[in-house]
Image 1 (spheres, rainbow, N blue to C red):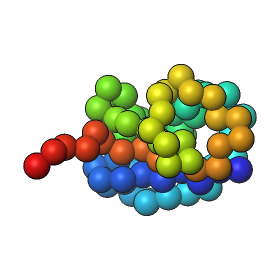
Image 2: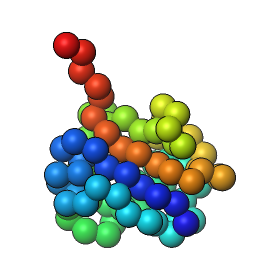
Image 3: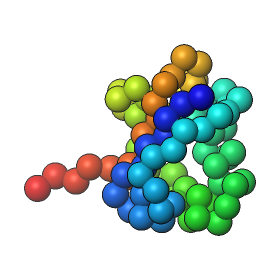
Image 4: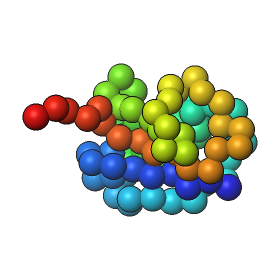
Length: 82
């Protein structure tokens, strides 16, 4: 069981800020595939992975990163300067 957090427009598309997810996913990409298969709102949020960043236990990571031992996954758009 892990916490999955959504920020900015990702949260707006999915409609919730966080949820607990039971998953057998080996990598972040596998987790995204599981979420997208759930409902259309997830498919909309994850339609363009190049527009997303992911952090595992608050460390910036990649979509090919393993989820073993991870307690928190956060999805957010790239931070913009200014």
